[in-house]
Amino acid sequence: MKDSLDHTAFEALFREHFPFLVSFARKYVQDEEASKDIVHNVFLNLWQRRNELDMNQSLKPYLFKSVHNRCLNYIRDHKKIVQHELPQQENEVMSYLESDSHIQQSELEFKIKQVIDGLPDRCREVFVLNRFEEKKYAEIADMLKISVKAVEAQMSKALKVLRIELQEYLPFLLFFLTDILG
Image (tube, rainbow, N blue to C red; front, top):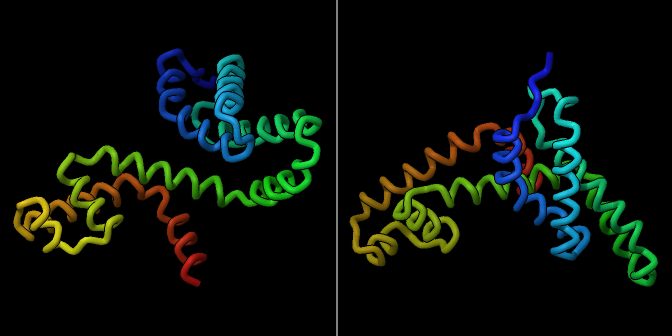
């Protein structure tokens, strides 16, 4: 017998995925409220079908596919409103949606941000300064009034956390980097 999705697990799933799915939907429908409605409806449908779900399977692909399909429905249903804009937008959306890698890439970007946001304050600060602002360890040490060794230790800690937290994304990350660099 399948385990069904209980209220607590559902709420945790909702809290974890809702903001990202709204952002994901907004890329297609370009409307914040419509995006929220689409994602709410996906979760409502999920709750209504909770007893039919196999909880041994990941729900992320289901959520992404459902939001994707509802976005396409939204675009189709609203094409009378934006008839002159739709052919170009529909072609762009369709070509973008045909590739599953964009979902994985978006999910990876979200997960990286989540992991970075979860780092301890000093560790996050050092990591962001080095990796996003391209500061050298000595510059960071000067800015933060700490030793270069402390900067090295914080970077080591941040990279270890990222490596552990993102290990399930490693195959995609390697594929994605090969695509960019190759």
